[in-house]
Image 1 (cartoon, rainbow over the protein chains, first blue to last red):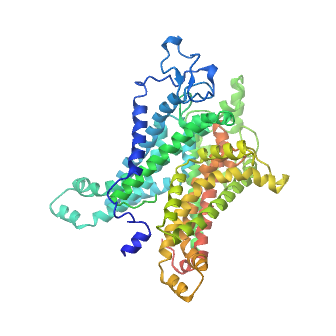
Image 2: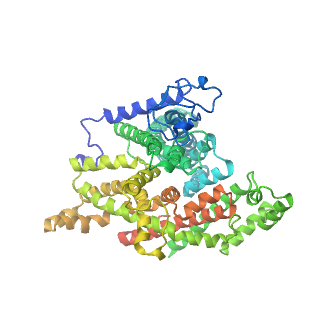
Image 3: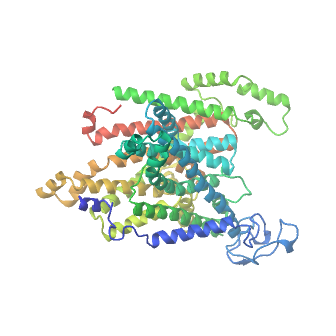
Length: 305
Length: 317
């Protein structure tokens, strides 16, 4: 039913299939820009993210820097002579805080799904390949985590362990593991029944070899596609925690925290909230567009967790 | 009936697991609730007294068994912050969260259903592409960003709605609704896209069924075909997603209640966490979990109303 497939949008872009348009390259450029800025944050000549300029609190973008409090002498303070994106309520440079905040957002956004992928993927492959008691036991544990309200788990971890980027990555990683394990298990089960696995077994391959050489290459792409979708979600979750004051504690800059701080001056100086909001929106949209583009090209359909 | 019993057991298991897990996470980890309860200059004797009052001087397992017993009896303990029964505080917060969630779902559905039907009936046209792209951009707006933008536009610049604060229903229906418009919109605008996409996909499949063709051949009006013949069988996935999203919604409620200063359960939980109020956190976790499971249970019931064929099938074990 080619027409039917077209109608539900599965292969509607047949002529352009396999090609990635600007809706893929533009977001990728933005993400690369963010990554390079964040990684090289110490190399660029930026003001320190916790340097305060009390005469210029909530100043609009482009204002001239005046006092330099925080570091010892004014002469040693680094950075350009004006605030490119203005300052926040405490007179700290917004551009610098955004770039340092990107470190937290991006590392949580990228590492948490990676942890989930490794953990859930491995367990899911095991559960799909050894479908006896081991498989059942793994899936029971995974289903229990799945049933647990995720937010509650994050908040309880925040409460009891305190929030560090590492804790956050581990907690979010564990939360995403069940979804990965389901995808891995379903795909492993499908491929384990295929003839080429039987052929490998007939040739005397060990279980380990079959898993790594025959099954793993086949199930990597759906797992990665799902992981990419999660990156955007994880960035939002990290932002939300920061916004609630349950994220990485201040003075470490985080996007969510910056948006929350700007609420107090929303009426007079909307840029304090709006600039980080915009950056966050663009980043989340970019990851969504990239995931969408790759999904379309590789012909992978959406996997619901 | 058997199905009902199974769901009840499921509920009990989840509640038990969640209670156990939160209890041990809250209690076995470093940090002593007694120190957070007393004031700065309290003497060690005062701390001891509080520990005794909260029952913290006893063994963890003794406390755990007592907690289970009390929970079964409906006693969730006393808040260490306000010294009020946890149950009472939660009951006071429940209507706020419930109203917020119900209103947001109404808004989300009233956006998603007409637009989903529109997109499905005009699938692959410019209108569909435009709407889908707009929806795609909208799904990338985190709810707290949406809330900030809404407050800025509608409360600070236009002044149509209050920026924050909660007006109880007792002070009149209109002020009450007004204080809920922006919060519900913040949740709904992040929510409706998923619903619309699901409905659109299902609707397109339904519109290719023979009975739709038959209805059209009979000369039924196009609008009537869409709403009366196609909508109901297409809404199964929509309902499922509504259920799955409940947990997600609580996350949205958490942020929205904090921003708009609504005294709901989610905000209570954040405040209790920041104040290290163990009993209250435990109570909130229990309430939210039971709520999620119950709503999903109701949605399972709704399936058989929407699609009577499901009732005849035996439930899959």
